[in-house]
Length: 190
Image (cartoon, rainbow, N blue to C red):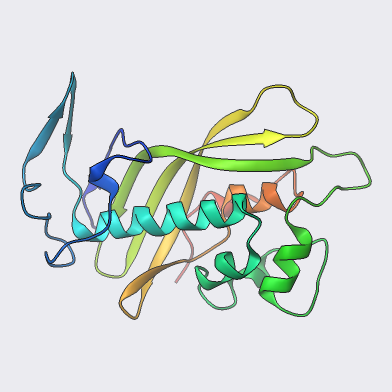
């Protein structure tokens, strides 16, 4: 993707990752066109496209944490969920995700309890594709301490907004798949 890459140290309440403004798709919002200084951290401001991609990634992760299959499915490119062999198929994306999120595998694999968006490690966006590397805190039933990992989330612009282009590590973990396929880490083809 021939786009700029921005590394940010954003937290869930950071204004740099808030909703878009009246600026164009790749223009910084008013007052955010230059590098911002936060303590000892110097970082470029996010473009409107980057902010919206981050907001979509955050909504997706929040939907998984809330066990809201309908919300997660609304944020997926149509057909995306078919890339995952869900443990409980129920005849549609939302019903299948509702039944599968938090699945307790009879083999005793780690049981996902929830994941929370902790920030953004990096974000890239161009006219029709984006990637957000979200830092995610994940809690498992059989572990006293949560895990912290960077989850690459790939997005595609459809209509006027962003949708998740492929399942991410967090989705695989949420449905009880302990070993996500390597494709979860690589950008989608096409």
